[in-house]
Image (tube, rainbow, N blue to C red; front, side, top):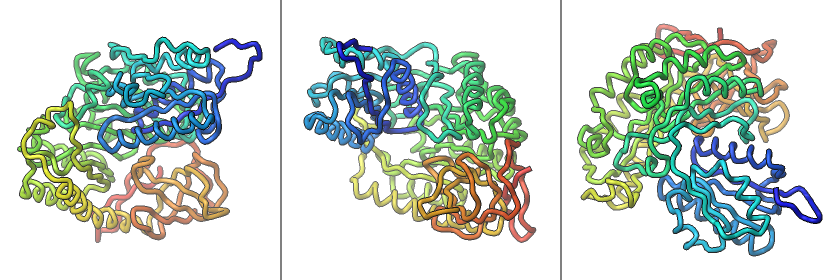
Length: 480
C-alpha cells in the first residue's frame, strides 16, 4: 500500500461487467485489494480509484464497456475519483489501443494480469505512471480463485472449473482473450467448493468456457463425471448447477452421475448455436444435428424432470431462410424449457468475419424476434404446467412489494438468466429453501404461496422426481 505522511485508508469502487466467469475474476481482484488494505465502497460514491472489469465478447458488450469507461472518465474529470483502471476482456482484446482511444485511463490490466491488481493500484496512488499496462500470457495452470471477495448473495456462488477454450468456433473471440483450455485440478475445485460451503453457500453454480471438456488437457480424458462425484460429497451444498456444457463428451460415466446425483439439480445449460448441419460446419461446432438430437434424447431419458437451457445464434453469414426455418422448426419440436437467441455479432478477428453472405441487421434482428416468438409459448406452457405443484424455492432476497414478500428461484431457474418466483407469506432469510405451492404465472416468472406449517428446508439432498397424473407426461420435482 502506498505510504503517505498522513496515512488514511485508500478507497476503491468496482464495476463488474459480462459473464459469470468474469465475475469470478472480479471477486478475486476485490479479494486482493481488500487484503492489501483497500476499503471497498459502492461505485456511486467518491473513491480514490475505480476498477471496471470489462467484457469484450460481442459488439453489444464492448459498447456497454466503452460507455462505462466514458462515464468513469467523466467522474474523474469532476474529481469524484482520482484514477480509473480498466481490466478484463476488453482490455485484453484492445490492449494498447485502449489507451490510445482513452488516454485519460490511468491503467489497463489484461485478463491474466488480475493477480497484480493491488500492485497496480498502489503504483497509481503512489504517483508512479511509467508503466500503464499489465498484460501477461495465459497460464499453463488454472489460476487459484480462492481468497476472493464475493459480490453474489452469500447463499450462492460461481465456481470456475477451467479457463480458456480449445474450440475455436468461427464466430467467437474468446480463445484470443482467454487462451487455450486449462483445467483446474479436481482437488483444487473441491477445496474451493468446501471453502464456499463453509462460508454459507447453498447453491454452487459451476462455470467454464467448455464444461464437458473438463480434464482432457490435464488428465488426457474428460473427467467431469469424477469432478461431479467429488463435489457431491461436499457437505453443506444443497444445489449444484452446471452451465456451459458443449454438446460433446457426454460420456457414459457423465450420464450415470447426472442420473443418480443427489445435489446436482436437474438443470443443464447446453449452448447449441444452430441445428442446420451446414451452419454447424461453418461455425466449426464439430457436431451434427443427428448427434445433437441423440444427446438431448438421452439426457431427457436419463435425468427425470430435466430442464434444458440452450442458446442459438441467428443471422450467421450465409444463413438462408430455409436454414433459419429448420432452426425454428427444431425449437418448436424440441420444446426447450429455457432458451436464449442472439443476433450474430461480426467480430473482426474471427474467421466468420471473412465469410461471404453477411446479412443486413434488420434481417438478423427479425429472425431473432421470430425465434423468440416460437419459444415464448413453449416457456409459458412449461410454467403453466407448474401451477398447482409444490416446489422448493431458494429465497434470494426480500421483495420490494412489501412485508412477507420474497423473490426466489426453483431448480429450473439459474441466477440472472432465467425467471424468478414471487413468494407470498412467511419470514425468511436469503438462502432459505422453502416449500411453496405454485399458484400462478406472470410471463416467464411464477407466483407462489408458502405452504402453511412447513419450515424452511435444512441442508438436504437433491429433489426427486414426482410424476403428474397420467393425463400429462410432465415430470415435476419435489423434495425428498
